[in-house]
Length: 112
Image (cartoon, rainbow, N blue to C red; front, top):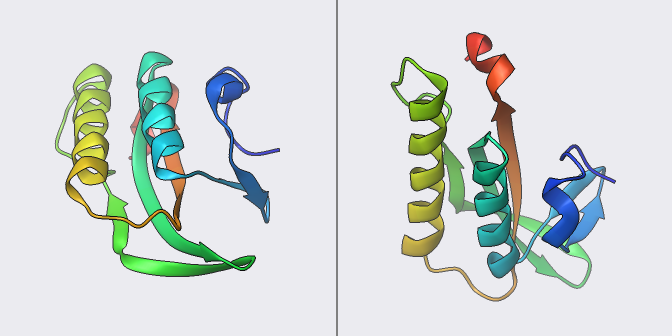
């Protein structure tokens, strides 16, 4: 269904298009928390207006947290978590906005 581990998807519902999972704002918050609890770092978020089966990218709903300055995984993951929560909480998105996420697992830290 998507590139997320099955464990993360247990409490998440959304729709898949092109092999990517798109989530509503409430589901986006759930995914952010689930990723953190499962030792994954959300490194990117992309927002789209979902209307009549079409996806329209929203430039003000794109965030990249991959370059945060941390020298260890726990700190890196924590910064990504807080940044993604702050981004979602501070931005004003309509009910038609859906989100796509990018994440890293700890063993890939060396390629950042």
